[in-house]
Length: 250
Ligand code: NAD
Image (cartoon, rainbow, N blue to C red; front, side):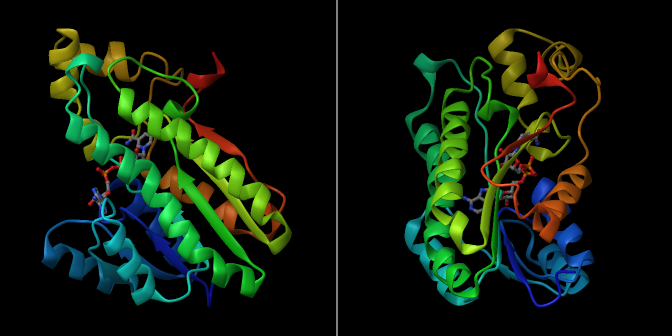
């Protein structure tokens, strides 16, 4: 049902973004991938999905502007690229703070402001921001990430109100822990910050609040993004959808 629609999914060479790109491609959307990775693997992905790829670094405004100009119109914008860093606030590296805010929050502002003029002209658009359970609640040692994701929720609500009259919806999807490189890579620092073993981090930190005691699968996020693109979801606007096994219900 997405034939003729062009979807840009940021941070889609891996994890949740890639699963979302696959789900939208299955519905016929023309996919633009973005993100870093091995050139051969990215070329294979492009072939598999009939997609194009932009390697823009989304912490750099001029690279975002070049990417958006190169793509042209975007009907479905999935702001998904993100990164994490785990450290006590007084030791939080300054460059990590700036990069996390730039990638997880500011990049979504830039892609949105550049995508909206076409969406308005077309009278249709979907903006889906991958936030996090950490857009609703906090955990210690993730000050930059939690600040960025709470900000992304506020940004999404704002544009949802601004664009509601133009056939454009804006929503957040907020996963709990999804088994992707982003989660795997934070285990060593969490072990250090909390003085725990790997198994303790998985069971007593990552899954402790996820009532299902299961990691979310990236494909589950892709399936929800597909739903939000449907006409039946035209009144789902400014919402922040939890997919966290019950974590934020507590
Ligand atoms: P991931 O590490 O598997 O993928 C991140 C993607 O972002 C990759 O494609 C990477 O190349 C790209 N990327 C990184 N830096 C970039 C930059 N400067 N410019 C452009 N692209 C860049 O991560 P993931 O777990 O799939 O996370 C995707 C999103 O989901 C993130 O916003 C993350 O915060 C959010 N999220 C993840 C989880 C989880 O448990 N994995 C939970 C909640 C929210």
